[in-house]
Image (cartoon, rainbow, N blue to C red; front, side, top):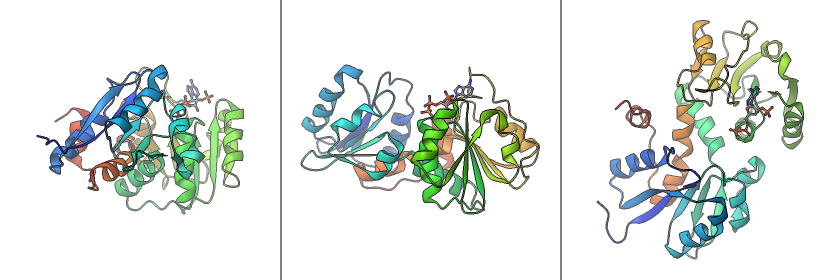
Length: 279
Ligand code: ATR
């Protein structure tokens, strides 16, 4: 139940019906008895400016922004946080009382918090990280790892130039590896991260030999459909610690919820099951 004073937020995307954000924010609103609402907003690329004016006109506290608006939204923000500038994408808007909009990116914190909370023994400073992929998700992962103190990060990507661009933007922490050399690049790796779409339901598998990967390495995949990707299954089989990608989605939502609704929500097993649809 909400009152006439309910705080409003939502998620803008095109399409939006697949988004899990309304389920997860709705769960927290209910759990913390917040007088607020979080709604899905189907916003076509042509309507983005009008939609932003609408948020202001309707007194929204803010919004999440998803595909395909994460870059285009930047031109409508009054302030762009450092994280969004470095990652090159905004996923969270916060409106102040005057309607000024700050755009930030919470994916990097979602990535790091997920690893820290899922595996308390993980130390980002402990060794080299290998990141597969050089898209938007990889940029968020790099930003998070560098902030957390990762000493060295190797990026392997099918399109070498994209990896090179990333290494330049995040210099001096990143070195580039040819995608065909990934298996050898795992030799002294403390953390292996897949940010490519390989292994996702309906996509080709990630064909990577893990023989050289130390047994002490942590392996994580930002793909969460399936929850246990072939990469994670293989890593588990050989005794590596693994963290699945669903937690990143849940943890990236925490800062937005806190900014809009004034409560810092917890990521729990109950929430995971609700979002997975198993409860
Ligand atoms: P996101 O924003 O989720 O990171 P993206 O920018 O489209 O999405 O990036 C997808 C990543 O998956 C890229 O690193 C892409 O490699 P390219 O830069 O070479 O395109 C990687 N990827 C997708 N399909 C792939 C495939 N069949 N083989 C290897 N890499 C693939």
